[in-house]
Length: 349
Image 1 (cartoon, one colour):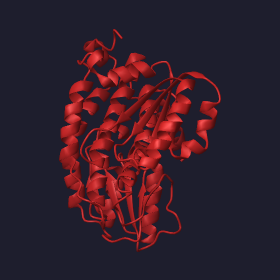
Image 2 (cartoon, one colour; image 1 turned 60 degrees about the vertical axis):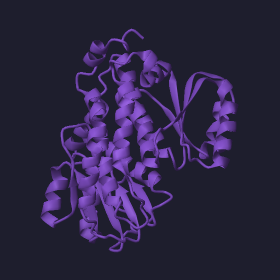
Image 3 (cartoon, rainbow, N blue to C red; image 1 turned 180 degrees about the vertical axis):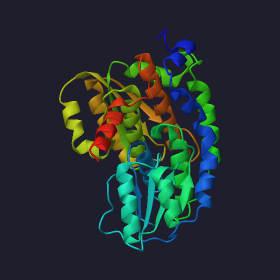
Image 4 (cartoon, rainbow, N blue to C red; image 1 turned 120 degrees about the vertical axis):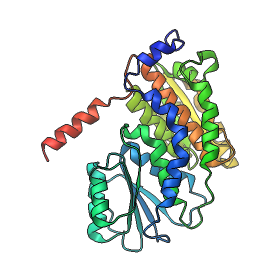
């Protein structure tokens, strides 16, 4: 509690500058969307679209797939693999995201697309992706380098949305609404805002020392749930349980409801437009599980449209994950196990 209310100590606990990323996220969205929209798709009316990536790059595909579930007239899929599925061909479209431009798995997909002559567009800061794009004349959206991939969500996601906005059926997307909403919320999340007035600090305090159980709703907050889980994994270095309604009412409700879990804190991520039947099912499941956990928090994104509400919840989760890290004396930026894995893999290339 004392640390949370000491901005200088909070900043000192973040030597690599993850708070800087949080602050800048709203500022990059509009420009990234415009850059993506300015790049013409190599196939504007594809039979289907596959979005490929890993980790902090792939989450943009998940968010887009959820966001466009009810509007896009072209099937969207997300792949985290080292090559493309056999069903893709010249009538389709592949969009590959690699922040560094050197992600091994996504590079495999790019080489596969080139060899099989599948239309492909890229979102990247450069690296080998940039080299291949120049060599083969591939359309690509350039994003600013220098961040951890998960800290470049503003550039990656809104660049992707700029590309996807060209597909049939995609309704008008307005990044300006997102920017206004996140800037307003940022004023309550900053380190200098005391805990009693700071929702992000309050939730971090509730989750500290506990097992976070993050539940979302398909399709509205499914990917947001994944984002919360991964941000707490990487920034806070904590284990998280995550699942999605209505699927969890067919499985995970059983183990959580079978006995008390006093170390579990449940966070349910909802949307104001979730169907009434699903909302009722969620309410009943919550009431069944509430007595078995330490606490339950229900959160709804704020804003006038789906994209703004989606990013409202994403932004809160990002701040919560960094406060959890700094409370524990952990620098949120380094991901040593990932770096070690990549180093060892490179040594066996």
